[in-house]
Length: 122
Image (cartoon, rainbow, N blue to C red; front, side, top):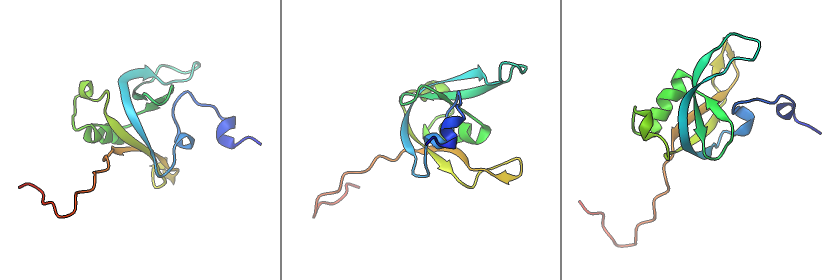
């Protein structure tokens, strides 16, 4: 049987594409797009495309700032190729209701274990 998320297609990434653990995503590009429906006036918003998905993620101010922090730069020209984690934050509110939402954070690559008996250089 179909899931509700499969019955409501979206042109953009949504919560059902991720989980609380998140997915490592590679920034492909950032651009402005008209996110309005065809029968509505234009509404241009910033979106990010990830190499792992065909659909873009619509960015709000929280996620723009999170992306800048995760990419160590406030210049979007530096973002392509950077790996970030996109995850569902169940505490996100919208319109006064807790709805959950997508968030972006830095991807911390796992460090190789140090050899026994070795000391870190100072």
